Image (cartoon, rainbow, N blue to C red; front, side, top):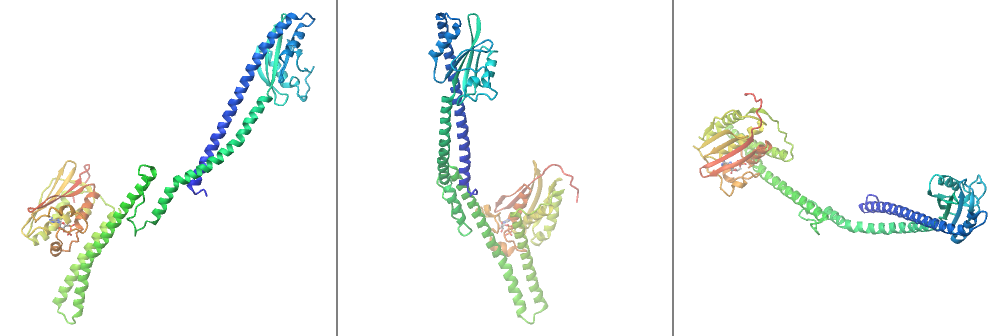
Length: 490
Ligand code: ADP
C-alpha cells in the first residue's frame, strides 16, 4: 500500500495537517489562558481599589475598639461575590478580618477542607507578599484553585495586607470547553482533509497513470506512437514532451540501425555471391588447367580480401558507435606519419600513372592514436588516387595553423557532384556506385569517409571536403596540435 504515491502523498499531507492543527490548538489554548489570567488580574486589582475605598469610608464611621475589623466586615459584605474571598492580615500575619474562616494553624495535610486560606500554598503566597508591595499568584483549594492578589495598605499608622482570592473554576470550565471542542473538531478536520487529499492526489496523478499505461504499450513495433500531451506548459505536459522526444531519438536510432543492417548485408552479399559462384564454377569442371585454378583462386582471394575489409570497417563503426573503441594515443611526429603513408600509396599511384607528392612540412609533434591516423590518411590517399583518372596529380600538405594541424589531400579528379557533396560522409554512400565498384581495388563499401571522419572527431578534430569541382577535390583534416610533446623521431 505504501508503494502507491497517492497513499504516500495522503499520509504525508495528513501528518503535516495533524501537526499544524495540534500546534494551532496549543497556541490558541495558551493565548486564551493568558488573556483569562490577565483579565482576572485586572479584575482583582480594580476590586482591591474599590474595596480599600469602601474600607476607608467605613473607617470614618466606626468608633469601636477595633474599627478596622468592623469596617472590613462592612466592606466585605458590600463587595462579596460568589467566587471571591477577602482577607486582611496584620504585619504579624494574623487575620484581622476575612470572608472565610482562617484556621489558627495550617494542617499538615494541606487544604483537605477545600478552604484555600488553610493551604500551604496560600501560606507561602502570604509570606512572599511581605517582601513586595503588590503580588499576584495562585493557590490551591476549591475545585480548580484560586488566583490571588495581595497589596499593602496602612490604617491608623499600622501596616496591613489585603488579600483577594478569585476562584479559577469558571475560567477552567471555559478552557475545558475549548479543549473538548478541539478534541472533536481536530479529528473530524483530519478525516475530512485526508479523504479530500486522497481524491486530490488520485485526480492529480491520473494523467501519470494514463501515461505509464500508454508508455507500457509502446514497443519496437509501434515506436511511432506518442503520448498525448494535454497541456504542454504544465509539469505533466513537459514530462510527456520529454518522453516523446526520447521516443523520437529512439526511433531515429532504430531506423539508423535498421538501415545500417540492411546496407551492411547488401554490401556483404556481393562478395559472398562472387565467392560462391567462382568456387562452384571451379568445382563443377573435373579437369582444369593449373592456370585456370590459379585464376579462380585469385578471384577468391580478391573477394575474400574485399570481404575482410568490409567486415573490419563494419566492426570499427559498431565499436565506435558503442563508444568501445579505445584510443591508444602516444607522442609522434605527424609529418613523419604522412610521409610513411605517402610512401605506402606510391605503388598504387604508380600503377595508375598518377603523380603523388608530399610537400615537406615542418616538425609537427602530436599526441594521437598513430594507427587510427594512419588509417584515415591511407583512406584519403586511396580515394584521391582511386577517383583521379590516369596521369592525374595528388598533392599532400601538412602545416600548422594556429593551434591545429591542417592535413590536406588534393587531387585532379573529376570531383563530386555538388548535390551529393553533403552526403559523402554518410555510411555506405557512394557518389557513383557503378564506377566506384568496378574501379576500386579491394572494393570500397562507402564506409571509408565515415570512418575517417570518426577518427578525426575522436581526436577532437574534424574532416571536411574543402573543394570539389571539375578540377578535382581537396579533403582537409584538422587535428589539435596540443602542447609541445616529448615526441621521439621514429
Ligand atoms: P568508397 O569505399 O566508395 O571509396 P568512401 O566513404 O571512401 O567510400 O567515399 C564515399 C564516396 O565519396 C565514394 O564512393 C566517392 O564517390 C566519393 N569520393 C570520395 N573521395 C573522393 C575523391 N577524392 N574524389 C571524388 N570522389 C570521391
